[in-house]
Image 1 (tube, rainbow, N blue to C red):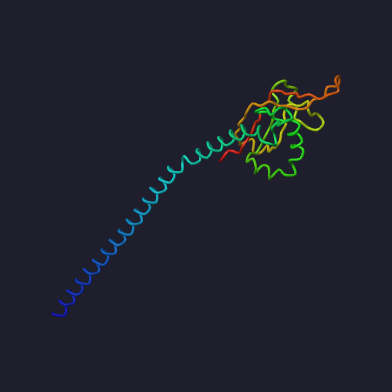
Image 2: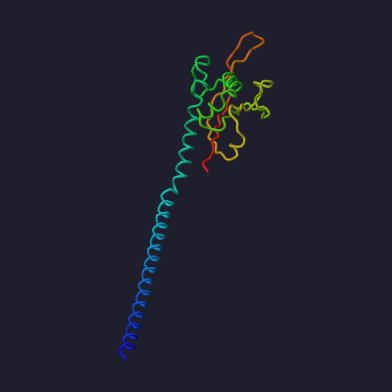
Length: 198
């Protein structure tokens, strides 16, 4: 009898301890799932904070790039590679078209260097008045052309944004009647295309 009772007590104790063991394992699993859920929650909150913090960064970078392009356009006409200089009486916002045309013909040798130097994908000088027939300047038709493409990358231009500035386009013209040269200035604009930040 005693052994049967002791066995019953032992079996009850073992079943109770087994139940408690399963219950404690269940609590451990619940705690682990809670910890994982809390970690996932904080990770999502962190990602939300980062995305809100960096959301304006792209717009700020684009605005800064646009401002730099506008400043570049305004300084470009007065840079030594473009400016009229002493030959035309040191005019402000004056581009020596002959100088730029020579630069255009030689820039292909240094294209990557100049693209990095100016930081833009395209520089065009367009004559506004008097306009011809929207001809692109080449050796065969210069100076009877309207658009001088100094740096041109059509692929980047389609995804880019432009900035422009109005300038005087001056060059030396030969007068066959008086057998002398004179300064001929016309109205034009400098257009700079830069690649938009994606």
